[in-house]
Amino acid sequence: MAIKRNPIKDNPGSLQIARTSGEFLRFTLTVEGPAPIFSFNSSVKGVLFEARDFMDHATDKYEWEHLKNPSDAQAFELLDLHIAFLANKEYRYKVERCAGDGSVIAVVMEIDFSGDPTDHTAESFLLMVS
Amino acid sequence: MPKRTTAILVSLWCAAALGAQTDESLDTWVRNRIEAKIAGARATSDKLLVEANSNRVIRQKEAPSGDARSTSLVDESSATDFLSVALALAPTATGTSATQGSNGSGVVTATAYSLLALLNKKSLTDPEFYKSHTMARQLSFSLGSASSEKDRDNTDQAGTVVGFKYTFLNGRDIYSRRNQERLSKLQGKFSTVTPVETKVKDTILSLLFCAEHAGREEFARFCAAPDTTARVPALDEAIAKFRNEIQPPASFAAMVKRVPEGTLNQVDLLIEKNLETFASLREMINATYDQIKQGRQLAITATYVNRPELGTDDFHSALVFDYGLAPRLNWTVNGSFDHRDRKVGFDTRGGRFATEFLSRLTSYGDDLWGRQPITLAFAGEGKWLTKQKPQYSAQAKVTIPIAAGLDLPIVYRWAKRIDLVDKQGKELKLGLTVDLGNLSQMLKSR
Image 1 (tube, rainbow over the protein chains, first blue to last red):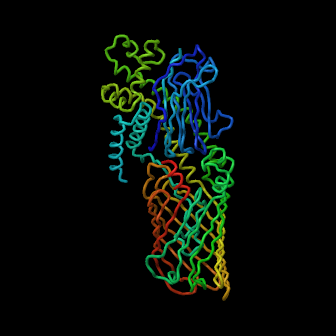
Image 2: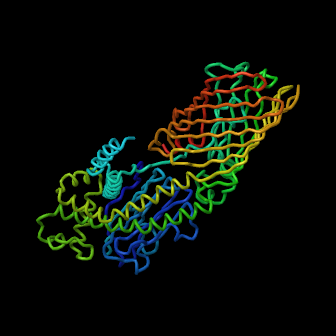
Image 3: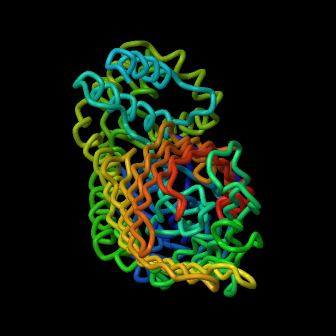
């Protein structure tokens, strides 16, 4: 196991989002190929996204939004990104808190990961929606 | 490694993994605990430890074997992924005429892919570029100089080496159809197993929260049976606050030290309940890696050595087959046609057969682009040329990594009937291989 985790802005652990005012989260996973394998999970709903869900897979950037769609909203959940290094040596995981109009309110976290081919790791935080 | 030593190492590793290290967060602590349990289960069932890496050393970085001064008796089917320089230094001991008037040889090998990436200013691992240039990774070129010997080559001036290699069967390329299917299956498994880990982690968080809030009446009902569905807003806020507090690794390590043994046992039980699921993902990752790295490769290679003035030119074409017999053992076979074009005297033509078994003696370091492992290879070669007696050689080679991207091959070679001279000879050779791609990636990642 030789995973390197280098936070540019570290994981806060938990986050509260004002869904009523239209806030949502934007996730960006930047990869340094050639073939990323990842899964973005909710403790309540299971897998929300995986690499194959993206039309242009394999690409160098994967972006998705959470809570923009009302059906995403859970009062309380653990959001957990799992990444594998088998065919992709580096990932950068960025979470942004956005206002209803799409503008970025704050960068919640931004972390670089690298690992050996047989490694896999995860990064999670608790999300409370009000 | 003896079973007992393996078991002791696993126990030590498990013990280290089960406490919280100062750089661990909840995520890494849970992951490490799962991996330790998997390794522990494997050790007790008398299986080997998780093999973290495999034979990524099997790429040709040395000068092609057609160069008599190369430290390689066989050609491997794939050149280094990117760009490498191989320098054969002077022999350290003499036993044959090979040392007379010798000049060092140096060859640069590059894949068409690396040249295209350079021209397009793309990263070598850019996913889209990598995906769309599979063919370019199958073609590599070599350019450099080959040493000459007066007795053998009719000149002591170095010749120019030009060569290419095309790997038309590449079972180790990630974008081969079969490997794409493997990776797709692995993604499927990943998406089946990791949500279980997410759930387990969520419950572990609750268990740790309850251990830290023991005796708090408002949480007693929840803590009696921690369950994600039994939460109320006040409880959620308290758990979220707790999650924030334990996010810094130092705080997390301190918290784990305070947690009673009973809670840690509950955590372990929860992991063990799902251990089969977690282990199945670990098995699949390792198996997929081995399958890709042990894939069969078949390549055609051609090398031309042009020597100045009346020196003898060499043409060497070969069919090269590589196969990973085991994660640490690679087998290579070459069958070739050789032509020596003598400007003075008669030409010789004929066939050549060579084979090599290469074993990795040490594991890879922590850094993906770091130092390569030490390898030991045994190779044999037979040459049957017109107007010459058959020639046989065998060699043992130890390759010692000096630093990331820099390897030192040490070769002991024995040969019978060197060209027209009917005698036996042996020599010790030293070489130096520089993998520029590896070197640059390593420096970049620093």
